[in-house]
Image (cartoon, rainbow, N blue to C red):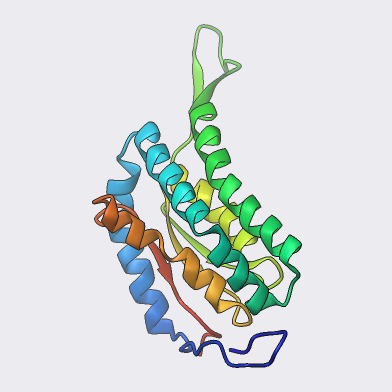
Length: 189
């Protein structure tokens, strides 16, 4: 991979294969019930912690975004800031969307809806706003109890790789058995 402004090599990333996707999905599927089994406020606490961690790496993330996408600093700062705020917003969404009382379908009956995790989310993200567009799905996905398999655009794999810090945070928080984001880089063979 080359830095957009200079053409200098800034990294090499392997091409993912179908087996890599299968392994990532299997691992995410195994981790998901435990993660979903945590109460929403507890999941929210971990999602907020991830936001604080990324906020602490704000400068690094901005620099990497500039190198990888070729965008100017102000635009990179906006993307990283928006991505961090998305984590906080997702925690609020979970606390406000536990379900609702619906109009009864029959007299004397109570109708309820509730929000439940889907399971494993598979995300293929674009190159133009790689962190922000990924985080718009990753953050609420995790907050609502799902696990994630992320495939960043082959033009911007570093930003996607930086998002895979989640397992590191999970280990730090003793959540490795629950929380899972798996990463498959490059164009799939």
